[in-house]
Image (cartoon, rainbow, N blue to C red; front, side, top):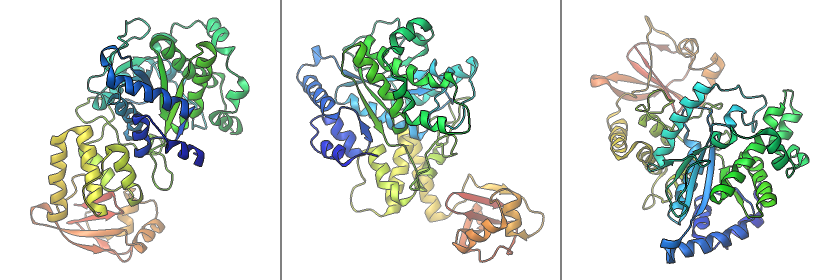
Length: 443
């Protein structure tokens, strides 16, 4: 939990970069905040006064290759890096071609399945496309071999397989193993959770935090990277790197974690939760994708309590004037479509929204169900796996959550009617909405 002392320190920040991260809600935990603020403040002053001789502070965040696209939640550390560029700080995005062969145990109660070489390569290609949506000028670099221009602000895309694959085990143990405490590692939340559970916790997984710490050390040693940005669940893995850098390189280094993207009741956006809105689109062949419509629908249907936080986090500037919740949600949804799919797609969604609210056109993503003769509402919803049981249907009805509309000319919808009991007959020619997000069309 973030302390009151932390927030009091935040109110006295000097670095413009940290000020913006704090104002927009990106910061959850920060190591050695006062020292980092002082270093960044001085570097930002240098950037303004002498750009010809300026060497930027280097920041990085990392992603393992566990899917072939990043999702909306992954945008948060990427945006932290992107904001840094305007203040003269250089981003590195590190893909875990090496660490993905082990699997991060954080937040899991059992071991991740191992990923084969072919899938890792496919995932690398897909995630690179995700990153290019935020950093279109990102440059791929093999930091273990390439000569890196240390004065450039160009974002770099690196792969930790480039250096982890050539590590000798004895050398690694004698260098890294001698400066990291096993007691400290076992005290990390990810380790304690696995040790207390029923599942196994393999030595392979236990090594993961050492390798993540080694990545930070390697980037610090080779190109002077001093700050790691990550999600709050990565705090334990990330600070291992600070220990290694301090003891082996005698240099300051820092970690900033951001809040995880969650619903108001604490459900994390992730692949396992089923709340993934993918950054890649239908033009990214072979990847997990989300359409412009799905992005729009996700944010237009987000909970009222998180709308203003999302606007601040993803966009950074609010909608002008005193706007109602629907207008703020529409602004949020259209801006996210524009960010990930471009202005043209955002304009299409704006026209679509106008049609939905004014002309009542059918939802193009409505699930189509054919009925040969009128059936009970609960039979249709349970039989087609829309809801799990008759009891769940009754609960939705009690809360006014199931409605239907007659389909009229030109495939548009007539007036809304609320179902009052689950025995009502359903026949062709209507659209039913269940809650905020699910719609079915009866044929």
